[in-house]
Image (cartoon, rainbow, N blue to C red; front, side, top):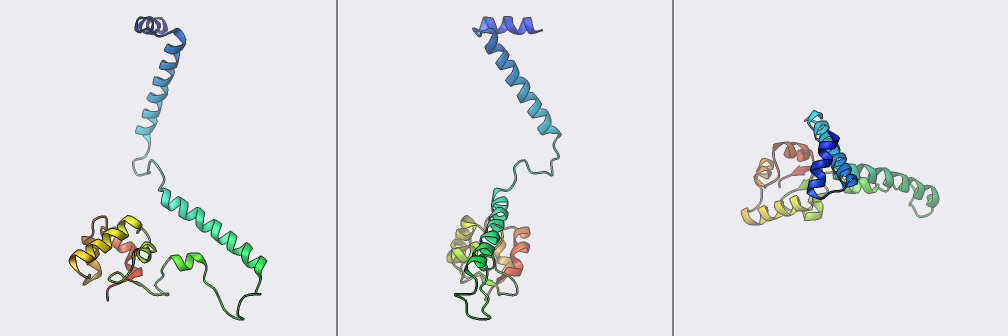
Length: 160
């Protein structure tokens, strides 16, 4: 079989080494295709980069804040004062309050889980075009916000 492949490659103008490389690449592609077909369909092919970076960033922030607090100490703090960490500032929580989607800026909307700059712009554009939201469910009328994303951010938003 190898001699037949070499004869076809020679007719096409390839050397023996070039034919070997082509056969190797074809075999590697075939193996990759077979493994990809065997992979579980529920498993994403590529991890969500935003989630992975946020997880790494939170680890880095917590370590750097711990180091900063250990170095600075309480010299600049008012006694008994507690400063929120950067992750507490960035992520709204039900206890801290909610984001009013009728008055929120783009940066404020981006603090909601799953809302990035593009979706925040779409929310603001929809609000400017159609007027204020009358109920939280109206947010699903914005392109790229479906029922799942709405349920994910519902604890953090309000309509006033």
